[in-house]
Amino acid sequence: MELRSSRWYSGNDRNSYIHRAWMRRGLPREAFEGGKPHIAIANTASDLTPCNSHLNEVAQSVMNGVWEAGGVPLNLPVVSLGETNVRPTAMLWRNLAAMATEEMLRANPIDGVVLLGGCDKTIPALLMAASSVDLPAVVVPGGPMLTGHFRGAPLGCGTDVWRLSEEVRAGTLSREAFLRSESSMIRSRGHCNTMGTASTMACMAEALGMTLPGIAGTPAPDSRLLEGSHETGRLAVDLVRQGRRPSSVMTRGSFLNAIVTLAAVGGSTNAVVHLLAIAGRLGVDLSLDDFDRTGAGVPLLVDLQPAGRHLMDDLFRAGGLAAVLKEVEDLLDPGAITVTGRPLVEHLDGAGIWDENVIRRRSDPLLPDAGIAVLRGNLAPDGAVIKPAAASPELLRHRGRAVVFDSVEDVYARLDSPDLDVDETSVLVLRGCGPKGYPGMPEVGNLPLPEKLLAKGVRDMVRISDARMSGTAYGTVVLHTAPEAAAGGPLARVRTGDPIVLDVAARRLDVDVPDAELAAREPVMIGHARPARGWERLYVEHVTQADRGADLDFLAGSGGDHVGRESH
Image (tube, rainbow, N blue to C red; front, side, top):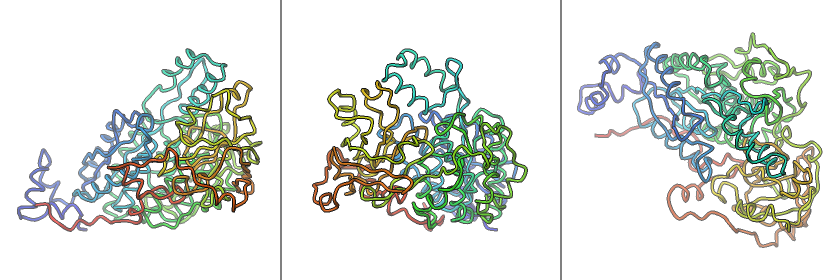
């Protein structure tokens, strides 16, 4: 088998000399001439991405495995996106990170790649890149942090931030106590320990077949993560020798398996846009409706925040993702393979549940129907999503008067005003926060509740937006409304006082205004982004809507790994 890297290194001409000579910094000659696969380690370690700051240690274990299997490991730092710090939103740069990584994988003399991600956007961006270049690839998820405690109670990072901050606003928790919890919440390396987007996407990567089976959810400080990383390095070399590429692993059946997994674990709504984007890079036929058709009847089996009580290290000790998937094995595509070459379902043999308080049996689910619900109607012609598992059951069918905000800044300015005409039956509507409008579709859909309602004991309301919501968040929140207001969607024509009707069982989201009257209204375009230059301008001009994954329109489909021209 001719290795791709040999197109750079084999031969006796000037160009091959240059390629070899500048890489000969301790590497023996046989690294270039002995048929050894060159494996890039696409590494998102960064001190500014705190959830990924330990990935250099993980990379070293991957390197050890690559060497042991007869390959040559090469560290390749790539764009890293830290959800907690990057402004205006990490989602603005997911596509940039994917595009930059794709180009670096294609441009360099490598035969395969190990993808190291953790924080929310890093695993999606890496999988999008790997799908586009279609070199043999495998993911190592960075793993969740260990559970922190405050006043003897476990803290779910993210989820308890939202909960405790609302208690401060309600006057039931002092600001001093809230700030004291800060150092208790983040007690170790690793990403969020709830079933937020980071944990969800690790599970999605395994369900898609793109990880060493059993590695998703391994806590970041656990030595078994390094053991799995070493084995992944060995596997990466085998993938090259066997010619197994992402396009042969991530088939339509694999994506349907991921949707089943998303429902069973109570995963983040963010997985919807990420899976659609990855499928788009592969040319796999996946639509928003597949999430409803495939996931709607799947039971919620994992009692984990934000939909339940426990945290990720509890899930790991209780049997992990394999134990969950074993319970819904009959719903999985038996032909969908993993990077091992064997079907996903074959790796479930021997999986067991060791704590039924954390992982429920199929016969005793947390919820019988837990998938992401896709809503349509005159407010969302192209769809919107809601996570019923994180919502208040009594609000899943609701009619209320709209209270409209034109931007996040408008929310900050007016939400807590004593003069705001709002009550607990109102529906909070936020627009201008979709892919084009913000830009980048930030995680602001879980609007805080008005202070005067918090004081009355209200803890949930129906909220609707064209934004996203943190995977750690909860509430009766309708998200990803498409088309967004900035793209001419109906949200731009809603007015405060309009009756809004939500009916999740019927999969409807409507404003009870005659169609002719709605169409005749002038759309409100206040606060929408109009960037003049750089990435933001490229993004706004080419980003697709949420129902298509919010990717760039010119990046659909795979570009392959071929580079035809020499550099010297």
